[in-house]
Amino acid sequence: MATYTEYPPKGYRVRMSTYWWLGKWPYLKFTLREISSVFVAWFVIETLLQINALIGGPAAYTEFQDFFRNPLVIALNVISLFFVVFHTFTWFNLAPKAMAVRMGGKRVPNILISGPNYAAWVVVSAVLAWLLLRG
Image (cartoon, rainbow, N blue to C red):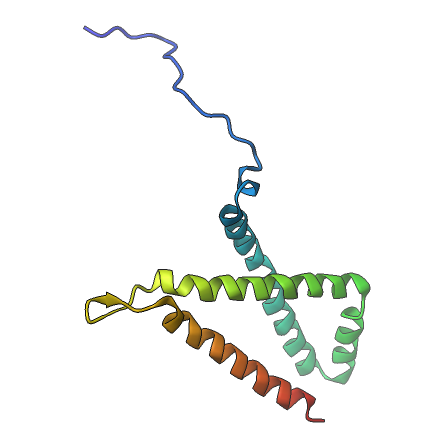
């Protein structure tokens, strides 16, 4: 018959640093990708604020532009751009792992899944650059 003890023995637990995710690139990349979502959200909020300022008229849009000339906001946007591009690359590279497409019993190569994403990104970027820079 088993006996009850008021203080059961503790199990074995490996001590782990708070910064365990810094030890290997895949862990760091995963963590940075998750953090990058905050910066993606910042760009969405910024776009919504810009649309709201445009609706508010010329005075509201001028005030909006003045706020975004602040060096801290410019620095935040540069950091956000880095994280958004990083988020895009990691997302496109993750797509083949998330979508296991099979044709003829064989898995479709990763490049055939992520490649069109990159191609569409380049085409959309080129069209937007042409529209914005044509004068």
